[in-house]
Length: 330
Image (tube, one colour):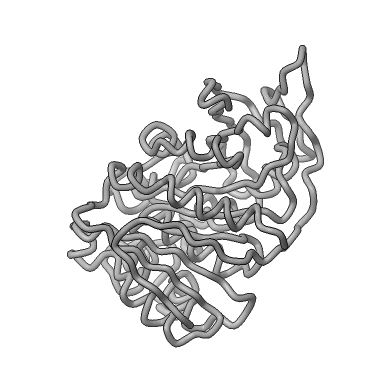
């Protein structure tokens, strides 16, 4: 389908595709006039509040819970905008981080909170891999194992017991959020950076309608064709490259025939990983050009690299983009 590329920031809205998987079940309780999410019970787990800080009249919080999908304790960030603290349902936006990151990097470095508060979006950001599990070799490399779950469901031992980040992000975490936070049913977006950009793209493409907005900063767009992706996919999935294609955004775009989907791809022109052919956005854009069900927006940022300085510069534009889609009339 169509595509446009620009070099200067702008925000363009599109019609959203509404999809509801059910309303949140348990609203937060108001204690002495303040909404409390400190110790939340769901049917299968307890959420433990690790920290909270007032931020732009909202609150930046961190929670811990026992994940049944990953069979370990997981930590994730939640930003609650002012409207959510007043008990008003808000759209939710998930952010997936890149290699070596935990939930903390995005919270501390991106500056997203001011923009999420302005648009009254709840923002949830999980960790990048299971934590606290005993697997030999998981800490040996920055690009595989701890901090590098690659948002796939591993098939190979010993990774398959715990490394199921795709199912965690698209199912368990969505259910936890729906059950415990004041979210608007069927108003959900996803975005991410690098490995997390790859994750955001495949989570949306493999689940048409689950997310009403999708964007990615410098995504690993064609992992079957780059060193990072080949290492991760071989390690988690085995040697059958046909299995790899199921977790590759470029391949998924080429085969996509479902609900029309717009993908907002953002790329720093001075990104050293772009030059090293780790990202390959050009391959995804070429695949999208031949698919009438996919619309792409591609913005190349002159002089910007792969860092959080780049993300912080354009995070406001991305959040405004998601807000326009998540608050549009269905």
